[in-house]
Length: 111
Length: 109
Image (cartoon, rainbow over all chains, first blue to last red; front, side, top):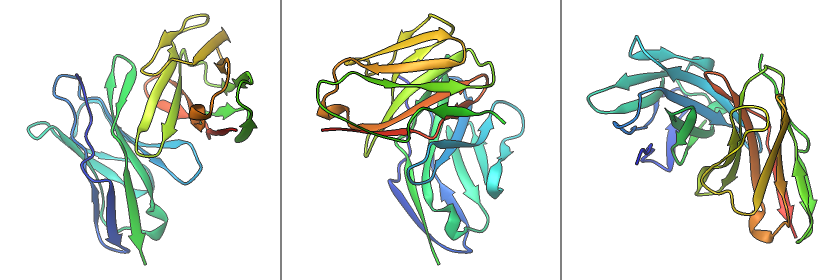
């Protein structure tokens, strides 16, 4: 069965430092991959997606993600974290127009 | 911008009540989805719809039903609310990308 793994429940980063939120996807599915962010008591907001082409995908709020086929990974990155980036982040993989979701990673940026 | 709206942000209901959660999208998307989100369990798909009057069960359809009479509207129905249906409910619509509504936090007493 297809699955998406986010191995870290929580990631703590100091403001101004680079951040990485990890995601690995299922090799049996198509590698259409997405990142979403959720602020407290809000719906999910789309950040970026990989469909095909350049392995480095740029998205909203200065985030980017790197698609790595050999490692089946799609890690979310940002060069310099802001306190306002603190939120819950979800990785997802497309599967016949549905999405297979990771469990989510809570990102905490400390001033 | 895609806009997905949900009828209520917060809702309190009593056990046994029939509950309607409404979702409307304005981008003429064919595909619409209902999820529930619980701490530690992530997003779980309840039902989805590919077109008007079409519905498909997701991973956890028990205790729920849906209605899609018009393309822009997808309703989730709790036939007889129970306390274990207390949750955050998220609606989404998609063409290539899923776009979410703000969510409805439902408390069943």
